[in-house]
Amino acid sequence: MNDEINLWTDPGHAERYLQIAYQIPRRTEGEASLLECIPAATRRVLDLGSGEGRLIGLLLERLPGATGVAVDFSDTMLDRLHARFDEDARVEVHRHDLDQPLPDLGTFDAIVSSFAIHHLVDARKRALYAEIHARLAPGGVFLNLEHVASPTPALHHWFLAALGVAPEDDDASNKLTAVETQLQWLREIGFAEVDCHWKWRELASLAGVRPL
Image (cartoon, rainbow, N blue to C red; front, side, top):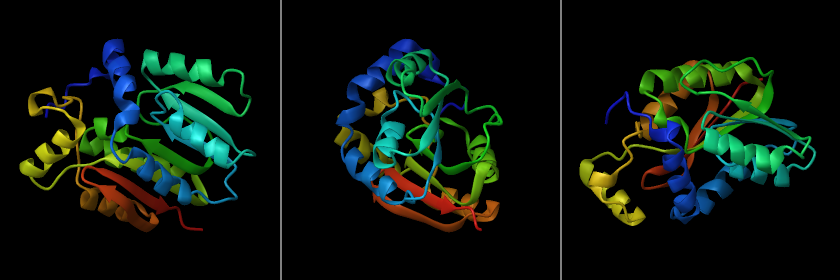
């Protein structure tokens, strides 16, 4: 792992991801687990690293009365987001690099992310989690469907094999962190009801609630 590498500034890298994104094994299971945790009363959602808008689209299907803010920094993904949502008054699209502190976009009932935060180094991940906590309304939920670290290199290679990826073709942008480490960060920051609600190999759904 090289902490300086981020291939997502390359449009070709983003396009290659979009070609395989929905072939990730068990992805829909993880998304279903995340959606189950969204309170019915949710009215405002922030989606971090929105990609082409799949997750925020699923959330707004589930919550037709809600509004959302989608952020990403990839030109390729921003083009997809604008094409999908520019005619939808419920969704705002903002350019933002998660390596930088979150801008002031107001408060939210739910902040979500899907396969994005693992591109940040650990110090920035933890800082981002604290920023998320500060931007949630009391009782608001943070839900992160994430790519996490395997306990051993052998288990990491087993996961790659399930994706059909050779070890030498592993994404150099990935900066994977163990589930247990991330859950502990959330507890230390002040989240309640912290848990991993679903996991399959290196895919996990992490959750926490800002106390009332």
